[in-house]
Image (cartoon, rainbow over all chains, first blue to last red; front, side):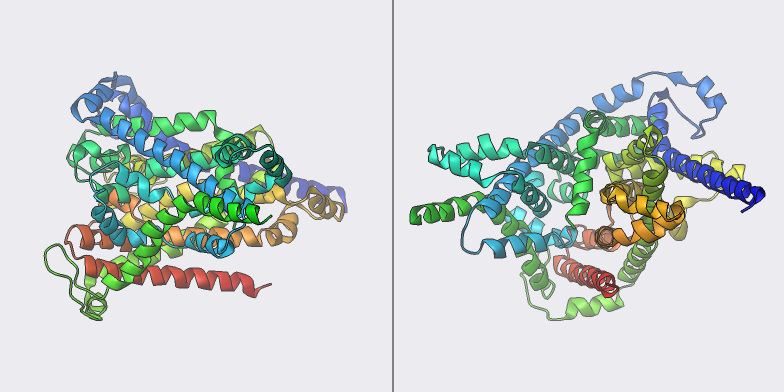
Length: 285
Length: 292
């Protein structure tokens, strides 16, 4: 190979590298810009034009009035609280139940165990949203409609969570459990003080995974509540956008920002676990 | 020994019971119910009567369903291939060239839309896609000399906008799965290829890609199942409109069931969608198994 050929090859590989970097940066802008825009507009008073030119930014009156208005006129604080309760409880109960089930599947011998585990695995492929009507009818029969519990209880049992926790039960050595048995350790204590701590990191990942999906779920809460004061943040956001207040978009963006911040702040602190929860879902396929 | 077995039996059931009961109540019983009610005229007021295939015959003649079906299939067919290719490409680039701070910055940034809900993302993009020439998307297009488009005001462009927003979020999600899978490929494979003189692109196609078959299978199946059930974006961005422009199957089920209170008919639609999803994921699995 002569020198020009080598040089040309190097040039092309550099060019390819540059194109790849530009492509990545473009994607980053597309992914992140909407949130920057959201935050900026939410801080501007009486935004008339949607254009973010230097001119509008210069003329804009910066204040927290949009936030004040959202929190005071629309019961938004209540919606935030509802979301925290619903997501928090779903998270807690789902993690607990999933780990318990995974523990039973992995460390206990009982008739029908493997068949039951197979059923759990199979339900992962069931498209849940297709079942909303019978789910609603059952929830109504159980008197859950128009309660926050309706948004929590039906989503606690997580086939995904159980399957994920099951694969982590290998980390719990049988000898440890046997030793605990010999020491006369009770079942509940064994579970909470031996098993749970050993799978803690997986539980955290699962918890975050459930938290974001619960925080963002729209269809099911929409069906189970007709009372405004039981709305979640996500419902409130869905109602605002395209609704009658849609023209005052500083106001809408303030609402959006308030709905965005709780999971985002959590993400900033627990980035690794966020990503892990999703990466794990892939390896279980 | 026998005592231990008995105890295992008891505690095993006890630990598995809460989840199992909830799973039966809120997922397994509903599967049977949705099939049963699809053959009835279940609605808000009347008694429930068996109507045979009437609901299904009505589906065939319902223009709203035709739109919903078209929109849903379009969404799946556009979304799934694009998301798969894009997330794979980005994961490949990041894993091969940017195992550094820039790479981890890109990964964190692309994950931000995943952290927030589709509803919220839709709500923000609703403004970005404004029909106004001063809207953000139209402004960017005007830099390239493209005239302002009323994105959400027409069926086709509104559907394209929905696809776009969903792709942005899904790429962030599946990228994480692909990236983790690529990092799991033993370094020695790639090093061996490098010794043999394979360049990055050859390495990607000959080493990385074949090792990602299982992951790709998973990504495509999950993404297909999700795409078939798209609702949140259609709700927060367009309310299914204009007309039936972005009405999807789930959106239609929601409207028939909870606005018109035609539960029986909505169940028939749900059964149809359910069977479509099962068929689609079955076909995908077969395709992936076929080239072993």
